[in-house]
Image 1 (cartoon, rainbow, N blue to C red):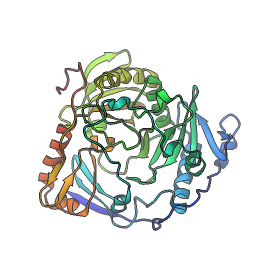
Image 2: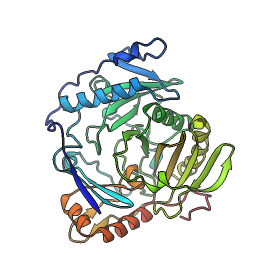
Image 3: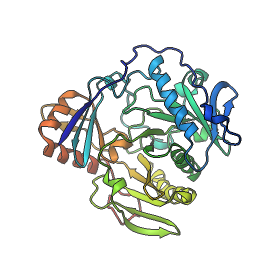
Image 4: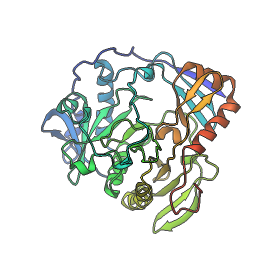
Length: 378
């Protein structure tokens, strides 16, 4: 077991100020490659979603993150003083002390009968000031617009939210996936950002009380680079193939405790991957249960996406140290566990074998198989 502390280059800011808008990178003036300026956000670039890494987009994300830290839009530096990571393979445990300032969303019980289909209601993401103050970049495809903003309460540096524009039809604003085109949008954004970025989606709570870590019922994904360290078996191990759909493989990684299905193909087959993954997501949508999705670019020019259907389970007690909620997000599904208190982190540091067993049970208890998939039972 290893542990280390990450040091911040600057202290966190305590109050929100007006965000400065990063200018489009100088390289963006290359003819035919330049992002357009957003008409309501002069100086904020926008890109059509497309295949291939965009150095300009990556530079705009880096500049937007720097500005967000300086202005206080990002409330704290997730690489700042006191941040620690404890390695206990196959898991990593991350403690970001300032994350305790994150407002908690109250979850009524029983859950709303609409579950995933709870209608969108006005929220901070709808406010025009949200885009003016927080947009770093904008990406678009086939009439769908996503504002990329800094996560105010990040788990790791360069933590962004691609947020669906508030002027989208109300039927597509609730926090669940509505079709393969949204998955394709996320995978194209991932391809433009390039490794080590990953993309995540955490759905609304299910009608059965299953949870995925999402707190805002407005369509948004997560985008951030994976921190250096051991790779998760979900994206490192060779999956067992359940079936092939043309160039796409559908299967799962044997031995991983979080029940899941993975869909993989060459990166130029993003559209086919999106369609195959949507067929799995649709089954969970029909069951009205929560889910998490994570996708990564692999060596050799391949892309892999993992879907984790969720089920309700009680919170897990950590002996003498506190409680770990079962309402956690997609990053944890593949082994990067966010720890809320130093007391729990110290227990993990002192009891690595017990921590592994507790984490394994937590992942098993909060996931179930995709309906109709014999590879993993629910």
